[in-house]
Length: 96
Image 1 (tube, rainbow, N blue to C red):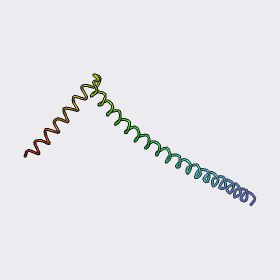
Image 2 (cartoon, rainbow, N blue to C red):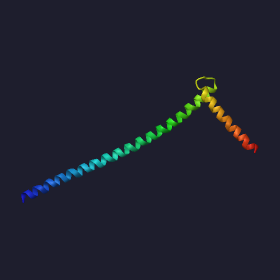
Image 3 (cartoon, helix red, strand yellow):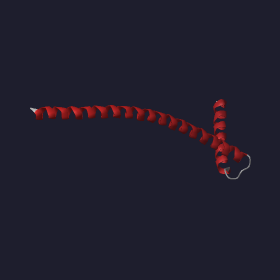
Image 4 (cartoon, rainbow, N blue to C red):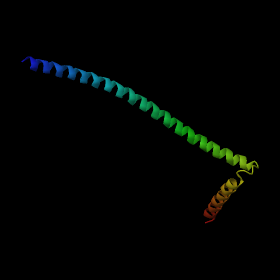
């Protein structure tokens, strides 16, 4: 009978340890989930900032090329040609 009581106590102790570990893991999970959300928001903000800076960089390159820089001359010519084609298309549509 004492072996049975001892086994039950052993099981109770193990169960208490498992419950304690489970509670600790729940707290840790919650903290990690909060950190993940925070990091996700930071990444989203950084991605939008990158997009904005890329657009600004493209605009500055175009402006630099228009001011006479030979570095982006080909790019500027292509952009001007596409704008001219768009204008021609609009004129044709207006003439119809």
